[in-house]
Image 1 (cartoon, rainbow, N blue to C red):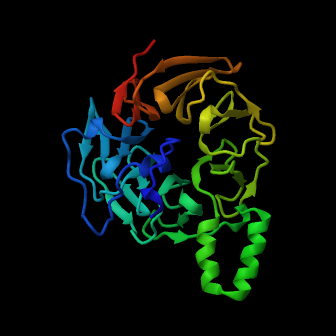
Image 2 (cartoon, rainbow, N blue to C red):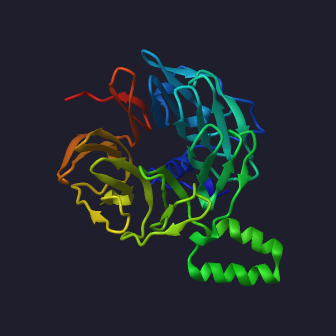
Image 3 (cartoon, one colour):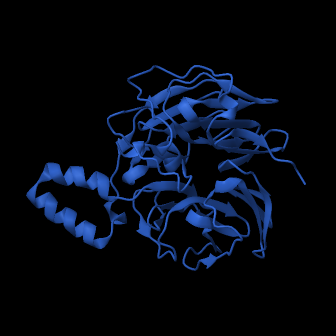
Length: 337
């Protein structure tokens, strides 16, 4: 299967997953609590109000009170992303097309969807309200719910294909319907991240320089002419601009029109995976090689820290305001300036 390949060039959740075993939902019921779980792979931290949760390897789920505590999980699939719509309502996604849901702020979780046969991971999840949401992932994986996740329906956004691929599929559809359906699910690039902008548009980024915008909650998409053709892993929305983070230290900023993109030069070529808005004029980014980088509104760049021997994927605040790094060695508290 595709995710058995060891691809550690980049540390997006997709690439991380390649280096760790993916557990089929048919093999085990759930994930047992592990004493060293907080020191194992953690891929995302999410916060809403006084609720802070995190997800990672082997279905690990975490809830923060005065410290990180692992909670019971209904899966052992690698979990890649989490979101909190309110302090109570949240979702997490991952391998085996897994979608989990919490109604009590991450203390308990239930499985809404899982399919080992799909053999693709979800890499992000976004809810617009308590009923409507989308989950996106590898090879154009895209599902939507209109009832809070009780049912999920797949969508194929072929408008995001290159023109030659669209033409190829149209010809194939007329000749061989079954082959058309098979090819359609492999030609789309990986969808790595989707965010909701201040004007309610959606911005989605992915492989092969994919950047696309939607004005109807993702029902239709329009590709953006983006200045970089490599992998794009994350989007950070700040007052000073919209940042897109990518492979080998590629960082771009737009003032919000999504048409003009300025490249910000870094002193490192480490892949950037995550970030957090620290203030109205500063964002903090994390990436491979343990880099922690501050970028200010005037595009000044400072290497804040570099943790040798580990890759950082996410950064988030706990209920006290303390910053936590998450990655290949679990949670690490970041010393405040």
